[in-house]
Image 1 (cartoon, rainbow, N blue to C red):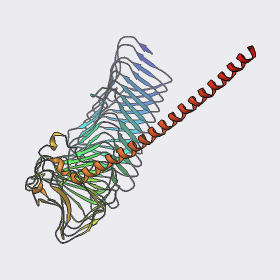
Image 2: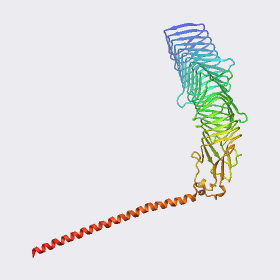
Image 3: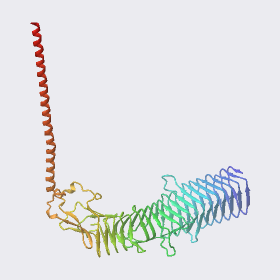
Image 4: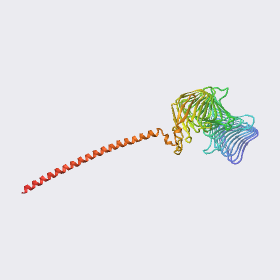
Length: 571
């Protein structure tokens, strides 16, 4: 039936079953209240108003499509609403459940355009083999009460989308005492994922949760648990919770930004063995502004190929693997491997900090001259081994000044297994005779050498022409291997008068005669060739003139003979 203006109410103890029918309300509301029990079977509903389920109403939709054109869906009190093999479309409104209302969706599809899905208070919301699409809206689940609220999505798909340039929607918010479980389901949100209070997100049974560009913001008391070959993919920004629990048959990947300013635990649980690695190809950032209370961070297994930034952080790995594309920067932080294995670097490491145990700088790896806030200083508790590249910078003659030089200090021994050392020097420094800078130090013994040691290599900042003026360029740096250190030593400084030309290598008194000799050779070679060429040309010209003169003489004689013969015959 059709209602042009007015509302339709099912109240009291009404029991109604509508089969192969339809309801169209052009301007008005549809309400189910009290203890009514209504079933729609193959009966579509079109509504331009509010849809309300109140009291203890029990409403069941089977193969019945629902369209709300300019209104919202409200389930309140203790109402029970069940959609089965139906399509729900809400345009310009929202879907609200609150109080103790229970909403169940099976084999159905919900589409909300320009509106939100809001599940409040203690009621339940469950989807089975269904899909939920929110366009230009948000998914919000909130329960401030002490009784836990549960949401379940099984074999379902959730998509929270937003229009380009809109920052106000596309978000999923799970707040306070709410537990949301995904079972064999997939979720993608364009905006942010926000978990507050004791909110918990379970990603189970081959489910996936993807955040392509938004921020994942979690309070320390919230949690994400991943299990059953499931995965969480962060391509945006994840403000980490207190803990992440991801068993071995699941995966946790960060391709965006994962950061925390409080203690963080990823799979470091006594009852969890062989947990899934945290795969980081984005930015993993842990830090606090309070250096007197460093963060305590534990990651059971890290596979790192991105950027790791640690500030005032004590980082513990059980297992860690890096790639040649990876970078780690420290700022007053410490790194240790609880398994007792050395920290084996395949990428770039720099900054100020400490490595518990031993540190290995492998063949393709690099120790950077600087971190993010100054020259690198690494203190290694045990042994330091390097077969890769090490960059050093000398910024000040006073090594007590923070950031004066790049320095690596080993608590036991140092083994240099070839590789390359590049040493950059502050062009404004005035070095003095016998200045020495210890760049790599061993407590016991230094063994081995670098394959090459370069001063002012191509990677160093370039000197300007003005910076050369007044530089004590006569100071010649040289590599100095001692029993327990690798150093740079300056000598010959007293022989210089401040003219940088004197420091050109080879010396000027070698370059000058060589240059003069080259000029003489050029003059002799090219000048001699020109002289010979000129003589040949003159000889050829003389021969040519002689031939022409002979030819004219012969012609003159011949002409004279012909003239005499003619005269005789006339006589």
